[in-house]
Amino acid sequence: MYNNISDFHMHSAFSDDSDASARSMVEQAVSLGLPSVCFTEHNDFDYPLEDGKTVFNINLPEYIKSIESLKHEYRDKIDIRTGIEQGLMKSVCDRVNSFDSDKELDFIIGSSHLVNGADPYYPDFWDGFDIRRGIITYYESILENVNTCSNFDVYGHIDYIIRYIPKDRIFEYRESDYLEIIDELLRSIIGHGKGIEINTAGFKYGLNRPNPSDFIIKRYRELGGEIITTGSDAHAPEHIAFAFEKVPDILKNAGFKYYTVFKKRRPEFIKLD
Image (cartoon, rainbow, N blue to C red):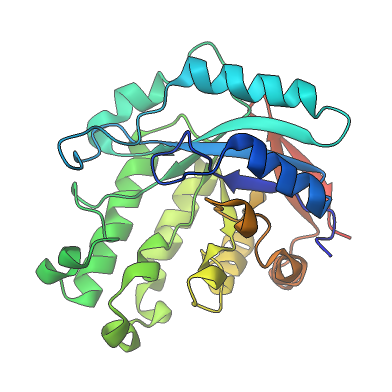
């Protein structure tokens, strides 16, 4: 059913927005017959306090120790790898670039969850922007992040902001209106030797498309992009490999014959069935 595709974007209770145990995530992945998974727990330096508390700051030694234990326990059932979803911002690029200096991780997703310190997940973000200006500002911030933060392997859910456009204003979004800055961003990602992911959570959010969209994935390939990982962005066991049955056709239609996984920060290319 899942065409031998690995899930390289998932979260457990090591991320502040998940209550799932890492073990429960592994058990579900095993039951689905996935060849490998990579935990990519959130780490966002300088994320705004929530109820006066720091969030999305990973305890890296504890996290690595826990996943290493699971790797050993499940070694005959599934290949478990250890990663991070790192929030990228120019203001914290020094901390991002020196993260995991001992090189214990297999994989780092670089993501943008904040635009000038504000998260478009929250409705009040849109109070200060019309749709076009909000999206352009978001893409401009990603471009800045790519050009200042180097310690990541793929950029996560590039059009993340699309998930959270107010539903009564989604009709204002036309992807073709942003082609110039999307192309500039993709060329920068490729030029820095980084990849992108296909993140199937867009289907879970009712968008009827992944993040980024089929259009952006195809454009990335047309511009010479080669590295593309596959992830569900699951925060609970039931969402692991969500809509993965759609992934092979999306990738093949974009011109890919393979998808990518990482081990010790090095890409491995897996042929699509």
